[in-house]
Length: 279
Image (cartoon, rainbow, N blue to C red):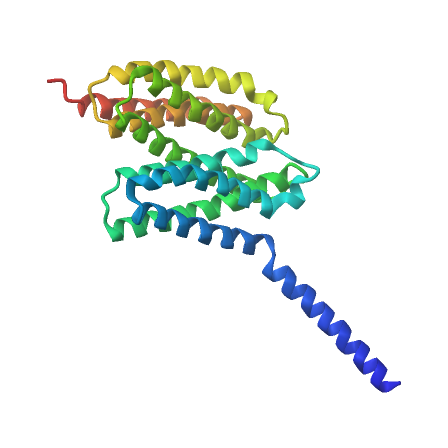
């Protein structure tokens, strides 16, 4: 009788330990870490060893970024699916991967960018997870997640704009690509403040803001400046109009806040104007 109880107790302990170990090994954070390590390694290998030919793998890597995110959070997405969750992770990986082409082919530089990519991607994964959970219940980390996500959006927007203008494509292709990443990025930036499942909720608003940047991009294509300065100015405009939209959604669109965003726009325009070679 005593032996049976002892065996039963051991089974229970083993079972509990197994569940805890399994929960630790396949927990959400552990899946995020494993995904980030895999994607960062793949990015470094594709860019450092394959060079410019690795550009084609960047698009596959961006798709894989979303796929791994889906595998990590699919349990929470079953009854609460929001396609906006997958916009920024895709564009972030795409932006970093393409920006690699503009960076000097030095080992230290590549390691630094890969490390920053890994840190940003892990923060982004955690933020997207917070948004998914927040759409079901209120949690305290929502404000921090919004800040992190918007920062990564600005970084991604600058990198993508820089790459597009560095390619020196014709005006139609340039505007097409600008529209392709501006619209979903604005849509995602508005979604993190509404957390509505349907894309239609902020579609018209995002389209209007995108058209504003689209029209400005027409002028910038003819502007005699460097791609980096143009991308910096365009990112500043993106920051201003999207930031104003976000504070409006938060119902704190005060005069001081408006002037803050206007000041940012004036600063980036001044940098663009005074550092442009007019000769």
